[in-house]
Structures are given as C-alpha cells and as structure tokens.
Length: 88
Image 1 (cartoon, rainbow, N blue to C red):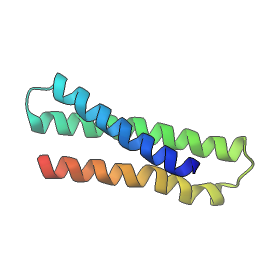
Image 2 (cartoon, helix red, strand yellow):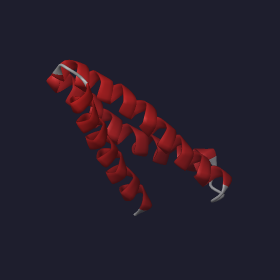
Image 3 (cartoon, rainbow, N blue to C red):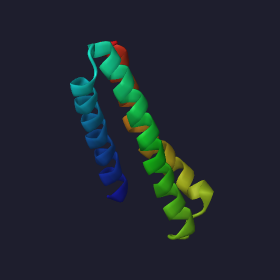
C-alpha cells in the first residue's frame, strides 16, 4: 500500500511540475523539457530518500529495497519521459 501511495505521489508531483512549467515557460516544448528535468531530479531524491529510510530505519537490506526503488522511480519517470517525448 505504501508503494502505491508513493507512485501516486510521483504522478501528482509530475502534474505539479507540468503545470508550473507551463505557467513559467514560453513554448510548450520548453515547458515539457523543463518540467521533465525538474521532476526527474526531485523524484529521484524522493525515491532515494524512501530507499534510505527502508534500509536505515526499517531494517531492510539494499537488495530488498532496490526493486522497490526501481519501481517507485521508474514508473513515474517513464511516464514523464513519454509525455515529454509525445509533446516535444
């Protein structure tokens, strides 16, 4: 359940980045590129912090947390790249 909440949070963050970039950038291509770059950086930090918490505080091993990290980061990141590619 926690993994699903993090993935949904990733999509919410992506929507926020896309909305903010659309307001701040002139062209659609510039907005998409900027939103994707900002989102990927922010989402990597969030997913890495979640992995660190799982290893350091919850007692999981890196081998147990790595697939969760890849899912948490990879799914919203792939959607962000696909959205950028479609509208670029």
